[in-house]
Amino acid sequence: MINKNVVALGFVSFFTDMASSMITPILPLFIVYVLNEGVDKLGFVVAVATFVSYAFRILFGYLSDKYQVVKPFVVTGYLVSALTKPLLYFANTWQTIAGLRGIERMGKAIRSATKDSLISSYSDGKSGKTFGFHKTMDIAGELSGSIIAFLVLYHFGKSRAVFENIFAFTLIPGIVAVIIVYFFVKDAPYKKKETTFSLKDDYSLLPMLFIYFGFIFFMFNESFYIIKAKEAGFRIEYIPLLIVLLNLVQVMLSYFFGLKIDKVGAKKILFISFVFGILSMLSLYFNFIIIGFALLGIFTVASLNALRAYISVHAFNKGTVYGILYGGVALSGALGAVVIGLVWKYFGESRAVIFSLTGLCLVILFSAIKLKGQK
Image 1 (cartoon, rainbow, N blue to C red):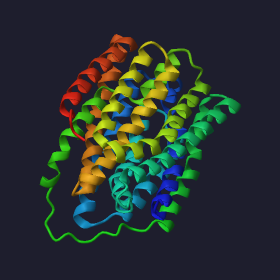
Image 2: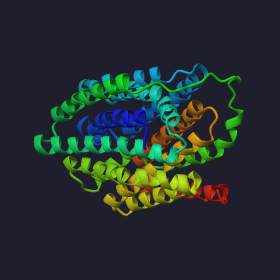
Image 3: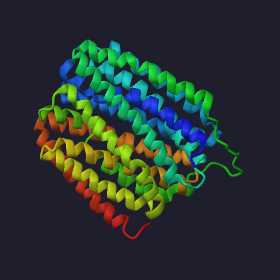
């Protein structure tokens, strides 16, 4: 039985990610094909959004553990995101988009580590199952948002005005999410620790996290997947359906991987997710775009569920370690987006994919050695 607070948080994530996924499949297209900016500029936008989204999770995770503040951070984070997404309606340059995405992602940074701590506090010893359920709701929201984006583009065309109206409409599901988290989610049942704050007890978790950071550096962000699909011949109005597929795969497999994590261990599932990540990039190389998106979904849901559950079980300072996870993803994801965007612009998409695959293979070889024999 899933705790009612986790269920409520699931619906919060559902509506928030519905709003986010209305933007996800169209923003790269808006930047590159409506504003006529290059893929390198898209890389900078992705880098800013990724870095802000994840880097500040370290700070708020630390503050949550040190001062025992959870729900206020969660509510504030959702409110910031809900109010910022619609402002993309007024964006005219990639710099403006980068700034707005940075502010919106700050909201995600404020809430994410503390939200995971809140979920963990209500997991009742079944972290894989609990995070699997929450991720299912999360991705179901993304699925709904992608479908909405597709239907709007299909029926109303792909003019600039249509893109901008989609941005504006995200205010509605965003505000619904804020109402739910404020009125229907209880704060974490925290107890003051008798010992002083220290991260030493969590050092053993860092090697696994750093392996993941290396993989994220070389892995294509989904924005590059979207541009790759357009370059491969997909029409703009149908590209949101690829995000639907990406999210549908995650919805179908999130709970499954949650149960498998509880059974066989998070480290084994993480390694398996790396294999799917490499297969996804190989699919892009051979222009098997649909297969690439499906495999990306498997990599994403398996890896995140594995790491979130692993931290829930083993971390002493959960908010801080979740913050480190997301902070590392910020740095590696942001740097990777800039490097891949520049390689793509100056050497072509094919070499960008080869660069990514080479790095991913090196990381998985290292992880196979590092994680061998570990549960």
